[in-house]
Image 1 (cartoon, rainbow, N blue to C red):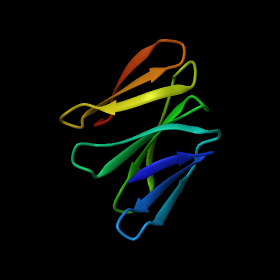
Image 2 (image 1 turned 60 degrees about the vertical axis):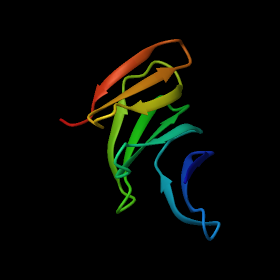
Image 3 (image 1 turned 120 degrees about the horizontal axis):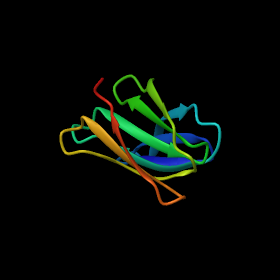
Length: 100
């Protein structure tokens, strides 16, 4: 399980109820998180107007998506995991190609 708090994404072991990783890199509050369909990546959106893509095996940052014009309200992977949709507070939606 993943949760956002301040500018950190925490990954939790829900069986043992303990955090197992802290993903740091956002400049402001994390507002949303979602796993890719295969569970290998996690996307986090933030009030800093960026989306970060994380590898869930190494817990390393693999990409930062910039170009949103307001804080990111929600993110969702496509069913095949090749693209990501982001919705912002200013009522805009962007589709990102995350395979290239």
